[in-house]
Amino acid sequence: MVNDASSMDLSSSTAEAFSFVVVGCNRVEKADVSAANPSTANLEQLNRTFTEVAALQPPPKFFFFAGDMVYGYKDATILQSELQAWLALYLASPLPALGVELVPLPGNHEVQAKSGSTKLAYAAAETMWTSVMASYIRGANGPAAGGPDGLQTDQSKLSYSFDYAGTHFVVLNTDPVGADWTVPAKWVATDVATAHAQGAKHIFAIGHKPAYPSPLSGEGGLSMFPAIRDTFWNALEANHAEAMLAAHNHLWYKTQPNKTWQIVAGNGGSLLESGVTGADAYYGFTLVKVDPTGAVTITSYGRDVPSGGYVDPAPASQYPLTIRDTVDGTWH
Image (tube, rainbow, N blue to C red; front, side):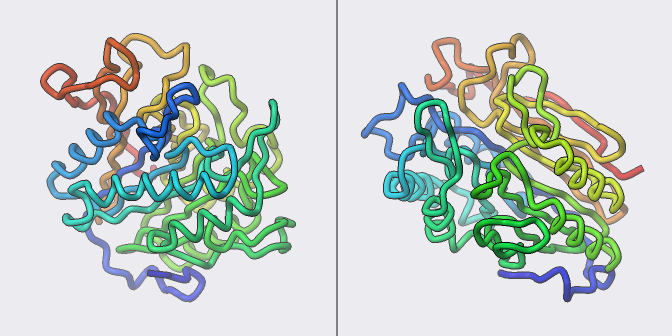
Protein backbone atom coordinates (compact mmCIF):
# COMPACT_ATOMS: atom_id res chain seq x y z
CA MET A 1 0.00 0.00 0.00
CA VAL A 2 1.38 3.40 -0.95
CA ASN A 3 0.10 6.50 0.81
CA ASP A 4 1.20 9.93 -0.37
CA ALA A 5 1.10 12.21 2.66
CA SER A 6 1.19 15.28 0.43
CA SER A 7 -2.32 14.49 -0.83
CA MET A 8 -3.91 13.17 2.34
CA ASP A 9 -5.93 15.18 4.85
CA LEU A 10 -4.81 13.51 8.05
CA SER A 11 -7.29 15.46 10.14
CA SER A 12 -10.05 13.41 8.52
CA SER A 13 -8.35 10.07 9.22
CA THR A 14 -10.12 7.92 11.76
CA ALA A 15 -8.03 7.72 14.91
CA GLU A 16 -7.98 4.38 16.66
CA ALA A 17 -6.01 2.61 19.33
CA PHE A 18 -3.27 0.46 17.85
CA SER A 19 0.31 -0.55 18.51
CA PHE A 20 3.49 -1.30 16.64
CA VAL A 21 6.75 -3.05 17.41
CA VAL A 22 10.26 -1.86 16.62
CA VAL A 23 13.41 -3.99 16.86
CA GLY A 24 16.75 -3.94 15.10
CA CYS A 25 20.20 -5.53 15.02
CA ASN A 26 19.75 -9.28 15.06
CA ARG A 27 22.54 -10.33 12.67
CA VAL A 28 25.33 -12.54 13.99
CA GLU A 29 29.02 -11.68 14.16
CA LYS A 30 31.26 -12.46 11.17
CA ALA A 31 32.79 -15.43 12.99
CA ASP A 32 29.33 -16.97 13.37
CA VAL A 33 28.27 -16.64 9.70
CA SER A 34 27.87 -20.14 8.26
CA ALA A 35 26.19 -22.03 5.44
CA ALA A 36 24.05 -23.79 8.03
CA ASN A 37 22.29 -20.48 8.71
CA PRO A 38 21.86 -18.67 5.37
CA SER A 39 19.89 -15.84 7.00
CA THR A 40 22.87 -14.85 9.20
CA ALA A 41 20.28 -14.01 11.86
CA ASN A 42 20.53 -14.89 15.53
CA LEU A 43 17.89 -17.59 15.12
CA GLU A 44 17.22 -18.18 18.81
CA GLN A 45 16.51 -14.55 19.56
CA LEU A 46 14.67 -13.79 16.31
CA ASN A 47 12.30 -16.74 16.62
CA ARG A 48 11.60 -15.89 20.25
CA THR A 49 10.79 -12.32 19.23
CA PHE A 50 8.42 -13.53 16.51
CA THR A 51 6.67 -15.84 19.00
CA GLU A 52 6.44 -13.27 21.78
CA VAL A 53 5.20 -10.47 19.54
CA ALA A 54 2.54 -12.87 18.22
CA ALA A 55 1.39 -13.45 21.80
CA LEU A 56 0.70 -9.74 22.44
CA GLN A 57 -2.97 -8.91 22.88
CA PRO A 58 -4.18 -7.27 20.79
CA PRO A 59 -1.59 -8.02 18.10
CA PRO A 60 0.40 -5.00 16.91
CA LYS A 61 -0.46 -3.53 13.53
CA PHE A 62 3.14 -3.23 12.33
CA PHE A 63 6.45 -4.97 12.96
CA PHE A 64 9.23 -2.54 12.03
CA PHE A 65 12.62 -4.19 11.69
CA ALA A 66 15.10 -1.32 11.92
CA GLY A 67 18.05 -2.70 10.00
CA ASP A 68 21.01 -5.05 10.39
CA MET A 69 18.78 -8.09 10.02
CA VAL A 70 21.54 -9.84 8.00
CA TYR A 71 25.32 -9.70 7.97
CA GLY A 72 25.68 -8.47 4.37
CA TYR A 73 28.79 -6.33 3.81
CA LYS A 74 29.98 -8.28 0.71
CA ASP A 75 28.07 -8.01 -2.55
CA ALA A 76 24.50 -7.76 -3.80
CA THR A 77 24.22 -11.47 -4.70
CA ILE A 78 25.12 -12.56 -1.18
CA LEU A 79 22.83 -9.87 0.22
CA GLN A 80 19.96 -11.23 -1.86
CA SER A 81 20.34 -14.78 -0.53
CA GLU A 82 20.60 -13.58 3.07
CA LEU A 83 17.54 -11.34 2.81
CA GLN A 84 15.49 -14.07 1.16
CA ALA A 85 16.47 -16.52 3.91
CA TRP A 86 15.49 -13.94 6.55
CA LEU A 87 12.10 -13.38 4.93
CA ALA A 88 11.52 -17.15 4.94
CA LEU A 89 11.91 -17.08 8.73
CA TYR A 90 9.35 -14.28 9.02
CA LEU A 91 6.90 -16.07 6.72
CA ALA A 92 7.25 -19.24 8.80
CA SER A 93 6.48 -17.30 11.99
CA PRO A 94 2.99 -16.73 13.45
CA LEU A 95 2.99 -13.04 12.49
CA PRO A 96 1.70 -13.08 8.88
CA ALA A 97 -1.35 -15.16 9.81
CA LEU A 98 -2.19 -12.67 12.55
CA GLY A 99 -2.07 -9.76 10.13
CA VAL A 100 1.00 -8.19 11.74
CA GLU A 101 2.56 -6.28 8.85
CA LEU A 102 6.33 -6.36 8.39
CA VAL A 103 7.98 -3.03 7.57
CA PRO A 104 11.72 -3.60 7.08
CA LEU A 105 14.30 -0.81 7.02
CA PRO A 106 17.84 -1.10 5.66
CA GLY A 107 20.76 -0.88 8.05
CA ASN A 108 24.41 -0.36 7.22
CA HIS A 109 24.92 -4.13 6.91
CA GLU A 110 22.27 -4.20 4.17
CA VAL A 111 23.41 -1.22 2.06
CA GLN A 112 27.14 -0.95 2.67
CA ALA A 113 30.10 -3.02 1.49
CA LYS A 114 33.22 -3.39 3.57
CA SER A 115 36.71 -3.10 2.12
CA GLY A 116 39.33 -3.11 4.85
CA SER A 117 38.22 -0.56 7.42
CA THR A 118 36.05 1.37 4.95
CA LYS A 119 32.28 0.82 4.83
CA LEU A 120 30.26 2.68 2.21
CA ALA A 121 26.78 2.31 0.72
CA TYR A 122 26.64 1.14 -2.90
CA ALA A 123 23.89 1.40 -5.49
CA ALA A 124 23.54 -2.32 -6.23
CA ALA A 125 22.69 -2.98 -2.59
CA GLU A 126 19.94 -0.34 -2.62
CA THR A 127 18.51 -1.89 -5.79
CA MET A 128 18.65 -5.38 -4.31
CA TRP A 129 16.99 -4.24 -1.10
CA THR A 130 14.04 -2.64 -2.90
CA SER A 131 13.70 -5.71 -5.13
CA VAL A 132 13.69 -8.36 -2.38
CA MET A 133 11.62 -6.25 0.03
CA ALA A 134 9.17 -4.95 -2.58
CA SER A 135 6.13 -6.59 -0.95
CA TYR A 136 6.90 -4.94 2.41
CA ILE A 137 7.80 -1.41 1.33
CA ARG A 138 4.77 0.71 2.22
CA GLY A 139 5.53 3.89 0.28
CA ALA A 140 7.25 5.40 -2.72
CA ASN A 141 6.94 9.12 -1.99
CA GLY A 142 10.53 9.61 -0.83
CA PRO A 143 13.13 11.83 -2.48
CA ALA A 144 14.48 11.09 -5.95
CA ALA A 145 18.11 11.58 -6.91
CA GLY A 146 19.24 15.19 -6.75
CA GLY A 147 16.72 17.45 -5.06
CA PRO A 148 17.30 19.71 -2.05
CA ASP A 149 19.34 17.02 -0.29
CA GLY A 150 21.63 16.47 -3.30
CA LEU A 151 21.14 12.71 -3.32
CA GLN A 152 23.21 10.52 -5.64
CA THR A 153 20.59 7.78 -6.01
CA ASP A 154 16.82 7.45 -5.94
CA GLN A 155 15.69 7.09 -2.33
CA SER A 156 11.94 7.12 -2.99
CA LYS A 157 11.42 3.57 -1.66
CA LEU A 158 14.17 3.69 0.96
CA SER A 159 13.20 6.88 2.80
CA TYR A 160 9.46 7.44 2.55
CA SER A 161 6.36 8.09 4.64
CA PHE A 162 2.93 6.55 5.07
CA ASP A 163 -0.14 7.10 7.22
CA TYR A 164 -2.30 4.87 9.35
CA ALA A 165 -5.26 5.87 11.52
CA GLY A 166 -4.15 9.49 11.80
CA THR A 167 -0.53 8.56 12.56
CA HIS A 168 2.28 9.57 10.22
CA PHE A 169 5.28 7.26 9.90
CA VAL A 170 8.59 8.38 8.38
CA VAL A 171 10.78 5.43 7.35
CA LEU A 172 14.44 6.35 6.82
CA ASN A 173 17.52 4.96 5.13
CA THR A 174 20.37 6.32 7.26
CA ASP A 175 23.11 5.36 4.76
CA PRO A 176 22.15 6.60 1.28
CA VAL A 177 24.80 6.20 -1.42
CA GLY A 178 27.30 9.06 -1.21
CA ALA A 179 25.86 10.32 2.07
CA ASP A 180 26.49 7.59 4.65
CA TRP A 181 25.54 8.48 8.24
CA THR A 182 22.83 10.92 7.12
CA VAL A 183 19.14 11.14 6.29
CA PRO A 184 17.53 13.37 3.63
CA ALA A 185 16.86 16.02 6.26
CA LYS A 186 15.38 18.67 3.95
CA TRP A 187 12.92 16.15 2.51
CA VAL A 188 12.01 15.03 6.05
CA ALA A 189 11.43 18.64 7.12
CA THR A 190 8.97 19.20 4.26
CA ASP A 191 7.27 15.85 4.79
CA VAL A 192 6.62 16.18 8.53
CA ALA A 193 5.61 19.85 8.21
CA THR A 194 3.01 18.82 5.61
CA ALA A 195 1.76 15.97 7.79
CA HIS A 196 1.49 18.23 10.84
CA ALA A 197 -0.34 20.93 8.86
CA GLN A 198 -2.78 18.34 7.55
CA GLY A 199 -3.69 17.24 11.07
CA ALA A 200 -1.50 14.25 11.88
CA LYS A 201 -2.33 13.18 15.40
CA HIS A 202 1.02 11.43 15.88
CA ILE A 203 4.35 11.44 14.04
CA PHE A 204 7.08 8.79 14.40
CA ALA A 205 10.40 8.56 12.55
CA ILE A 206 12.09 5.16 12.28
CA GLY A 207 15.63 4.64 10.98
CA HIS A 208 18.62 2.43 11.58
CA LYS A 209 21.25 4.85 12.89
CA PRO A 210 20.23 7.08 15.80
CA ALA A 211 20.52 10.84 15.78
CA TYR A 212 22.07 10.74 19.25
CA PRO A 213 24.06 7.53 19.84
CA SER A 214 24.43 5.84 23.18
CA PRO A 215 27.63 6.81 25.04
CA LEU A 216 28.40 3.09 25.25
CA SER A 217 28.39 2.53 21.50
CA GLY A 218 31.57 4.20 20.32
CA GLU A 219 29.66 5.15 17.14
CA GLY A 220 28.68 8.61 15.94
CA GLY A 221 25.24 7.90 14.51
CA LEU A 222 23.74 10.81 12.59
CA SER A 223 25.83 13.09 14.84
CA MET A 224 28.71 12.41 12.45
CA PHE A 225 27.20 15.29 10.45
CA PRO A 226 25.70 17.57 13.12
CA ALA A 227 24.30 20.22 10.78
CA ILE A 228 22.23 17.64 8.87
CA ARG A 229 21.25 15.94 12.12
CA ASP A 230 20.07 19.25 13.59
CA THR A 231 17.95 20.07 10.53
CA PHE A 232 16.36 16.65 10.85
CA TRP A 233 15.83 16.77 14.62
CA ASN A 234 14.55 20.35 14.67
CA ALA A 235 11.94 19.36 12.08
CA LEU A 236 10.74 16.52 14.32
CA GLU A 237 10.51 18.85 17.33
CA ALA A 238 8.81 21.66 15.40
CA ASN A 239 6.11 19.30 14.15
CA HIS A 240 5.47 17.52 17.45
CA ALA A 241 6.91 14.14 16.53
CA GLU A 242 6.67 11.91 19.56
CA ALA A 243 9.78 9.84 18.86
CA MET A 244 12.48 8.62 16.58
CA LEU A 245 13.05 4.89 16.99
CA ALA A 246 16.38 3.48 15.83
CA ALA A 247 18.88 0.67 16.31
CA HIS A 248 22.58 0.33 15.26
CA ASN A 249 23.79 0.57 18.87
CA HIS A 250 23.42 -2.93 20.31
CA LEU A 251 21.41 -2.12 23.42
CA TRP A 252 18.19 -0.44 24.55
CA TYR A 253 18.69 3.26 25.20
CA LYS A 254 16.40 6.24 25.67
CA THR A 255 17.11 9.96 25.55
CA GLN A 256 14.99 13.09 25.23
CA PRO A 257 17.01 15.98 23.76
CA ASN A 258 13.97 18.26 24.11
CA LYS A 259 10.40 17.01 23.73
CA THR A 260 10.83 14.38 21.03
CA TRP A 261 12.11 11.09 22.42
CA GLN A 262 14.78 8.96 20.83
CA ILE A 263 14.57 5.24 21.51
CA VAL A 264 17.38 2.92 20.43
CA ALA A 265 15.93 -0.58 20.08
CA GLY A 266 19.11 -2.25 18.87
CA ASN A 267 18.89 -5.20 21.23
CA GLY A 268 17.36 -7.65 18.76
CA GLY A 269 20.02 -10.34 19.09
CA SER A 270 23.36 -9.05 17.83
CA LEU A 271 26.27 -9.17 20.25
CA LEU A 272 25.64 -6.41 22.78
CA GLU A 273 27.95 -3.43 23.19
CA SER A 274 30.87 -4.33 25.46
CA GLY A 275 29.89 -1.80 28.13
CA VAL A 276 26.34 -3.12 28.52
CA THR A 277 26.15 -5.07 31.77
CA GLY A 278 23.81 -6.07 34.57
CA ALA A 279 20.14 -5.24 34.22
CA ASP A 280 20.79 -3.39 30.95
CA ALA A 281 22.08 -6.55 29.21
CA TYR A 282 19.00 -8.03 27.57
CA TYR A 283 17.47 -8.89 24.20
CA GLY A 284 13.92 -8.14 23.18
CA PHE A 285 11.69 -5.67 21.35
CA THR A 286 9.97 -2.32 21.86
CA LEU A 287 6.18 -1.92 21.78
CA VAL A 288 4.60 1.47 21.09
CA LYS A 289 0.93 1.89 21.99
CA VAL A 290 -0.96 4.74 20.37
CA ASP A 291 -4.24 5.88 21.89
CA PRO A 292 -6.77 8.10 20.07
CA THR A 293 -6.82 10.40 23.12
CA GLY A 294 -3.24 11.38 22.29
CA ALA A 295 -1.45 9.14 24.78
CA VAL A 296 1.64 7.23 23.63
CA THR A 297 3.29 4.53 25.74
CA ILE A 298 6.65 3.01 24.82
CA THR A 299 7.57 -0.28 26.50
CA SER A 300 10.79 -2.24 26.30
CA TYR A 301 10.27 -5.99 26.64
CA GLY A 302 13.34 -8.09 27.31
CA ARG A 303 14.92 -11.41 28.17
CA ASP A 304 18.34 -11.95 29.70
CA VAL A 305 21.30 -12.84 27.49
CA PRO A 306 21.99 -16.60 27.54
CA SER A 307 24.80 -17.39 29.94
CA GLY A 308 26.56 -19.57 27.38
CA GLY A 309 26.76 -16.90 24.68
CA TYR A 310 24.62 -14.58 22.59
CA VAL A 311 23.53 -17.22 20.01
CA ASP A 312 22.91 -19.99 22.56
CA PRO A 313 19.46 -21.43 23.34
CA ALA A 314 17.32 -19.16 25.49
CA PRO A 315 14.26 -21.13 26.63
CA ALA A 316 11.48 -19.01 28.08
CA SER A 317 11.45 -21.13 31.23
CA GLN A 318 15.01 -20.02 31.98
CA TYR A 319 15.00 -16.61 30.30
CA PRO A 320 11.45 -15.24 30.64
CA LEU A 321 10.25 -12.14 28.84
CA THR A 322 9.59 -9.23 31.19
CA ILE A 323 8.97 -5.49 30.99
CA ARG A 324 12.30 -3.69 31.39
CA ASP A 325 11.39 -0.03 30.90
CA THR A 326 8.39 2.16 30.11
CA VAL A 327 8.35 5.67 28.67
CA ASP A 328 5.44 8.10 28.50
CA GLY A 329 5.90 9.19 24.90
CA THR A 330 2.87 11.50 24.85
CA TRP A 331 3.64 14.89 23.35
CA HIS A 332 3.57 17.45 26.17
